[in-house]
Image 1 (cartoon, one colour):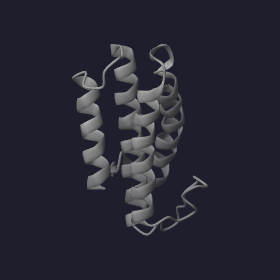
Image 2 (cartoon, rainbow, N blue to C red):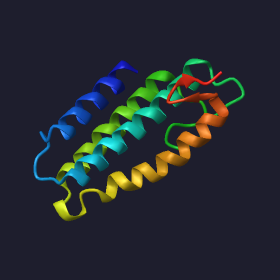
Image 3 (cartoon, rainbow, N blue to C red):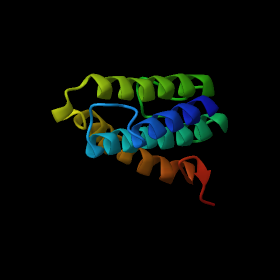
Length: 126
């Protein structure tokens, strides 16, 4: 989980301070928000996997019904890097489209995870 968190922090800092060039503030904000949404989902999914899934299961067909913590980390590390790479190669005029789609998809996943794991971004609510 530390790898996902560290990678997310690096991307957020790079986007925030403008180290990822050729973009507007809106484009950087989209990358930051989508990276944070992926990191939040990663933390919730990791928490469920680390607790043995109990009565829960993963709905992402790529991960499978009850992925292990290494599988969760590999998937979300790939997703976060992939998000940044796609964002970097997109033309400036449409740079925020992919991150916006990721945010929309992740918002649903995060809200469903909140109900089933009793946590927000992996932090227990009870």
